[in-house]
Length: 218
Image (cartoon, rainbow, N blue to C red; front, side, top):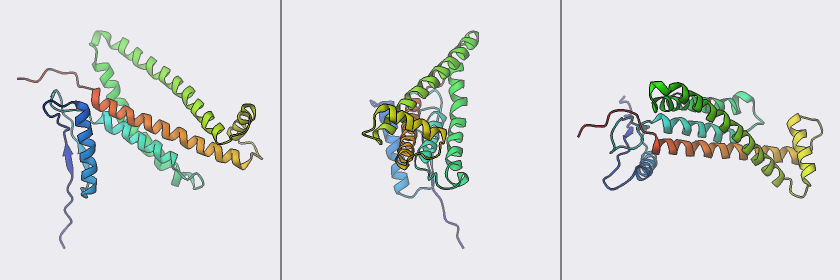
């Protein structure tokens, strides 16, 4: 019995003469879709360094955030009526894998962008930006959650909406079914927003992160 041959695609995202990194990314996405339609087994993104003719030298800058985006999207569509291990845990694993792939190369990029004499300053700035970004994200996503929750409870005054939201979050008994449904939809909306942000981060990293190293010989 002959084994089935599986073919994959290896892409380096070349930048054609007169084109740009953004166009190269578009070509990569088009090629990935074509490979999927043609039935290829996997689509690989190659790592390369120091070449102006190739876009996105760090695949982790794209793969990690995209994996995190997939994990967040899975959370948005998870069936919370099922057991935790069947609904939430797989999505959390995908999200964790994406963050694990993303953080080390991102930190290395920040630390490698300055000399050793300024490594301490770079580390401090990196930590400060991460903390401030976390605070802003909590504030912004909280506003998104409340706005979405209020939208699904149209007609109620803001004070009653806030009271209903606090009751749902506290797990109080006797919460109306429409408030529970509104919270479920609002939570899924937040997950989709964060998934979109992670996807945009991957695209931004793919376009603009470049390795630090000697210029290629001519």
